[in-house]
Length: 244
Ligand SMILES: [Zn+2]
Image (cartoon, rainbow, N blue to C red; front, side, top):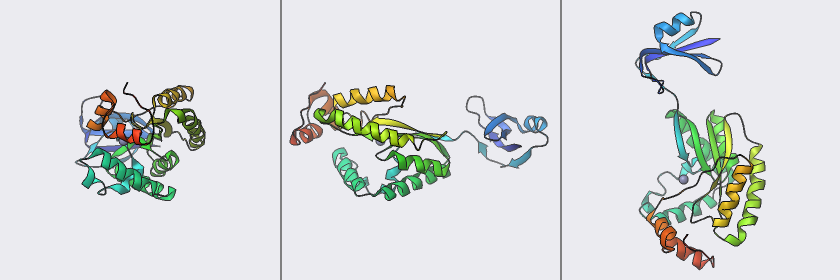
C-alpha cells in the first residue's frame, strides 16, 4: 500500500527544493518525490496526508552524541571553562550511574532527538548495549561506539582482550538499523599500543572506529610537549608517557 505525504515544501537535499511537493512511500521505501500533482497522478489510489505549510526533508544526523549522559544537562556547565575539571566531574558522576540509569538517560536523549527531527546517530558510550536498546526502542538508526580506556601501555593487551569479549556480547544486540562500533576514547586516555590493537580489532571485526581528538588546549600541550594536566595525571599514576 502506497502512502503520499505532501507539504508546502519538499527538500530532497540531493536535488533542489520542490514547492507544493510530495513523497510517496511503500513499506519502508521512498518510491517517488516530486510535485504533488505529479506524485498523486502516479499513485492515484494512495492515501494522502497533507501537512500544509511545512517542509518534508530527510531526518537530521547527529554525528557525535553521548545519549547516556542526557541526564547531565545543566550539571556540568559551571565547570565548562576548565576541561580537566569538567571531565573529572562527568566521570565521577557517570561511575555512580547504574545500568538502568544509563538506559533511561539514553532513551530520554533519543526521544528528545526524535522530537527535534534527528533520525540517525553516531553515539559514543561506556555501555553500548544500553545506547543500542535506547535507539531501537525509539526506532532510530545509528552506530553506537563502545568506548575503550587505558593509558597504561602495560595493560593494553589485557584491556583489548576484555574489549573483544564486550564486542562479542554487544554484537548480540545489533539490528538492521543499529550497529556497534568502537572508540579508543582519546589520545590522553588510551596508550599507543592499545590504539594499535584497537585498530587491528576494528579491521578484523569490520567495526567503524571513532575517537575524540583536538578537544582542548590541555590535550594539545600533552600531545606536542608531553606537559600539562594530562601528563601530570599519568605521572602521578606511575604511567610512562612520551609525546609522539
Ligand atoms: Zn564525545
